[in-house]
Length: 342
Image 1 (tube, helix red, strand yellow):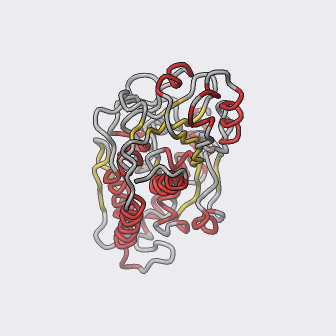
Image 2 (cartoon, rainbow, N blue to C red):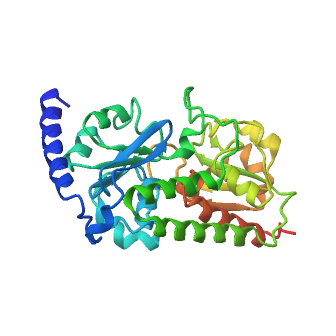
């Protein structure tokens, strides 16, 4: 994008931001008093994020961020979403249909600026970093407050791949993201209701479930060198909630690439398969994964393949999002159907 183009877009954005600031109390359908208590700030991944008023033109750069905003009832305050791996949750489909999709995958910085956002959120550090849409500093220079999911900031993203974690991720970190966004948009009660609902669903999923002897493998994508879950990301939340065991819990990498011979050595009881609709890797859908498993000379000998113990999960359920709760529920249900619960 040319410097002239960026400058023009920046000028348009700043002018729009001033207009919005003048309409401080107008937040769509919210009453004028909703802006009381602003400016408001949250601490986010080492950055103080401050907003002068409840955002009215928000952009979610990843599906996880988009679905949290939609679940908080903020669809009328969103002007764009991007980077989708799965269909939106059915309960959010109607609101989502009214929000422009800027790109199925990573949008350009220019396309985001063109919708004149007053707030930007992302699920991953890489989205708001070098090689992503733009850096946090670039958005800040244009006066656009920006937020990154704290679940991604907790891991070491300095190396290659998807980073690594020293400490296991918990749902509390995802609840923090919900609370932060609810505070920024002045919908705290909605945030607490959503968190209460998710907590209760997690409790029920694990109720009367003894799977302490069950071993599980999580496969996200790629058939030649599969991306499998390490110990401590979103799959770790599901595994620990159900008291099962991840066969690759001895690696702290988020999604290490592991060969089929090493997988055969661990021979898991159950295979959790990412069922993605994106097209950036081989074996994205669950059906593609199953076809590969059942035709591969090594993978076809796995006990889980021979007994067809497959659990299909959305990519979002396998990432640190509120849909990790959906993943926990579906895994618990499948383990019961397989007769593996005590």
